[in-house]
Amino acid sequence: MELKAEIDLNRLPKHIAIIMDGNGRWAKKKGNHRIFGHRNGVKAVRETIEASAELGVKFLTLYAFSTENWNRPKMEVDALMELLMNSLVNELETLCKNNIQLKTIGDTASLPADARQRLYDVMSQTKDNTGLNLILALSYSGRCEIANAVKDIAAMAKNGQINPDDIDQCFIQQFLDTRDYPDPELLIRTSGELRISNFLLWQIAYAELYFTDTLWPDFRKNDLYKAIIDFQKRERRFGMTSEQLPQINNA
Ligand code: IPE
Ligand code: IPE
Ligand code: MG
Image (cartoon, rainbow, N blue to C red; front, side, top):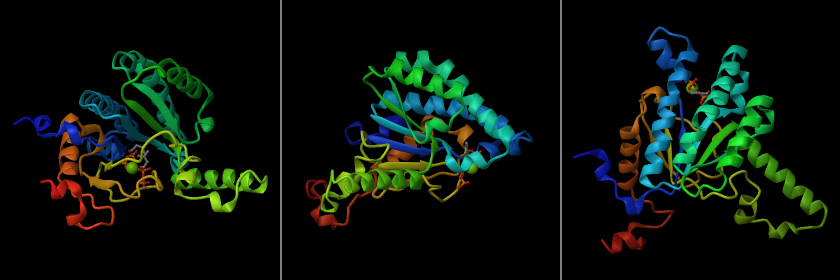
C-alpha cells in the first residue's frame, strides 16, 4: 500500500516543524563542498512543502538558519544567503499557485538587505493566500525569542501597563514570534542528530519528536509521510493516564 494512504487525514498534525539537518555531511559523502549539499537541499524543501500542502497541513515551520549559524565560515554564510534569495525569487509562483502564505520567525532584520527585501516582498505577495502557512525560521534562536518576550513584558510592567500577576503562559505566548500559530505537535529532525539546537524551545513543550538518519537532501515526500504515520501511532497523554483520554475510551 502506498504510504500516503496510511495517513489518517482526520488526525493530521496542524503544525509540523522541521530541523533540516545534514546538508554538509551529504555533500562530504559525495566528495563535494558543503555548499553543494545546501543547493541539493532545495529539492527536499520543495517536496516537503508540496506534500504538506497536498495533505492539508495548516502550518509548516522550517529551520533554515539559526543565529548560531552566523558563526560558520563567511563563504558558507554568503552561499546560504544567496540560496535563500534565489529560492525566494524562483518559488514565488509555486507558492501562489499552491495558495501558500509565507511567514517568518527570527531576527530577519539581520539578513542581508537584498534577501530581506525579497523576503518581505514575497510575504506581502502571498499574504492573502489561505492554504498552508509556510514559516521560515531565519536567524532564529529560541532563547533570544524568549529573552525578547521577557524584555517587552518587563517594559510593560515598568510602565504600569500590566501587573506581574497578569503574566501567565498565555500572556507570554503573545509576545513570541509564533504568537499567531499553534504549537507544533510534531517536530522532525533529519541527519541522526538527537538535539534541538535552540529551535522553538517554548513551543515544543509537548511536541512529539521524530528523528531520522536520512540526510536533508535525501528527504522526500515518503519520509514526511513516515513521520506523520509514526506520529499518529503515538498516545499523547499530556500528563494524564491512558484511561482518561477520550480517544482511548471511545476506541
Ligand atoms: C543544515 O545542514 C543546514 C543548515 C544548518 C543551514 P548542515 O549544514 O548543518 O549539515 P551538517 O550538519 O554539517 O551535515
Ligand atoms: C540546526 O542545525 C540549525 C538548522 C538546521 C538551520 P545545526 O547543524 O546548525 O545544529 P548543530 O550545530 O549541529 O547543533
Ligand atoms: Mg548540521
